[in-house]
Amino acid sequence: AAQVLLTTPAATKFYRSSGATARQTQTLRVAAGAALEWLPQETIVFDGAQMHSLTRVELCGDAGFIGWEILCLGRPAAGETFVRGTCRLDFEAWRDGIPLYLERGRYEGGSELLHAPWGLHGRPVTGNLVCVTKQPGLAEAVRAAVAEPAAGVLFGVSHLEDVLICRYLGASTQQARHLFSRVWSM
Image 1 (tube, rainbow, N blue to C red):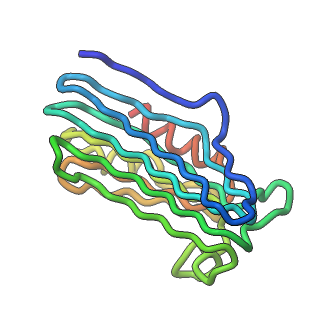
Image 2: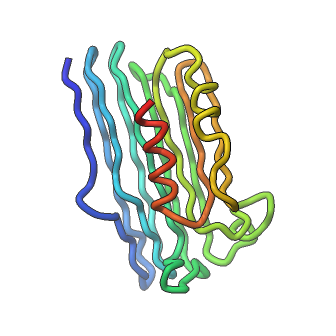
């Protein structure tokens, strides 16, 4: 019956690399009857970084989970864009060894994906909030609460079986965290 909120003391930063890939793997295990809130600071990928980050959430029985990951490609406040490098950001949620949600993000510095309307459309910040819950009507309540995000922000909500997924695409990590915090408080 443990209930835990975990965060990070600061943003995770991946700096420019001379060729080697920086790797980060986080495995979060939640026992039956427990609940985990995983609310880390953003991940900042500097121009020229070579990185792969994996967050894997393993739920047992009726364990609950809500968490987010916010990614900033480059340092927009400093005028730095992500023109070189590779960013792989993977997120997995499993229950009793069965996948509930698998997210695979692949971003190549300077690629068309970063600027095309079918991709990130020039927005440097993307994020996902994942909530494993059976709460009926939650997706509709979230959509109503975030009906009009700021101009230039794309925010979507999906509910697939027991997994609520919110996606953010915009220009500000603070704005992403603010919107996700509104969902988390619900």
